[in-house]
Length: 418
Image (tube, rainbow, N blue to C red; front, side, top):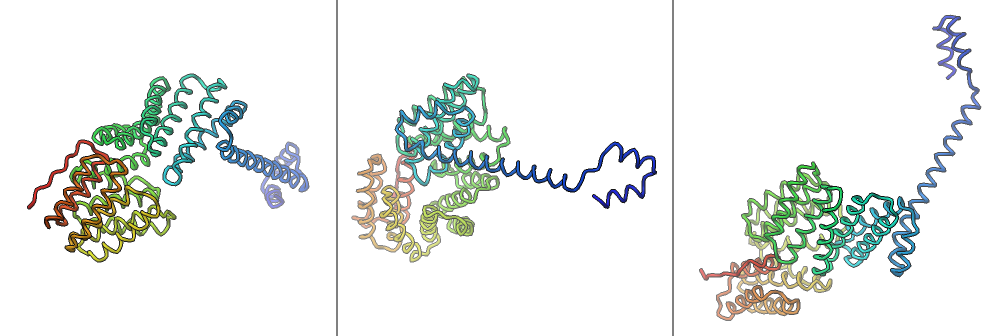
């Protein structure tokens, strides 16, 4: 500041300098320092206030789930609408994030989000159309959480109500795209994958229109996965996956997608392509802490080794995955791994082990009430073992059919001996 004043004194005329000094009284150094201290003090106070409000919000979202429903509703109805809206968004995001980690907590959070939306409606803070949007969003996420928790009837009801609210809302196209995505997931779980593909196609067109690249990438990846279930040409499946992977930035999703692509390649016998996709996933896995993803990666690596003809490595990985699946109490996945291992044993000519693994899978699927078509396919494999006609190709056809039949009721198993 002193340098600037001296500079002006040298450059300005005495008249101009007199005008300037008369119009703007110079402030003392102590006054500047006092002003700075006041600003810093206010900034610190604002920072503390923000941190306090944020901690209160986190505490409230955690405590809400511990309260009995009646008490929880009372707390919500006595909260400010602005706080409720922030809380709604936080709870919804937590529910989505928990969908692969703790599915029960994901459901509990989704239920709480519907209660928050109801409290906002009762406050009268939002317009009627905005309330319909809020209720539609809450019910859409609730339906998805119910589906993940195997409550397909509850999910269908929630998603139907979400559509009704959406039709009375503001016409939010992002919300419509999200609902199309959740409906597609529901149709896959119901074994109606052809309908799911059509719903995703509509969602993808809407995401393109919105310029929503990240979510467009996610939907393209899901479309590729459904394409593999529908046994669409591997070139088309690969096209969806690659188009999706160029848009997403979430490392978790990239690993999940590349592993799914590798799985699709390996099950169709394209070992080299599967290995290429798997290598991409493996490079990113080092930066992600997810035991579930790492286990699935090793599973895919096992079937990739089989497709490449490295039967020893395939058997090693698949046996290790089978043991972990049993310990994690994932019966359906454990049964499919057993059938994948049966493919390796068939390639090695170990028909007695093929029979034992098929019996293990059959027992699990009967307990899980798998559809009769899939059970019939496994029984055909057992009969082929008895007559020494079981081959690697037949075992692969059986396991691929069982995987697809869970999500596509239109499939029928057909096998002709070469």
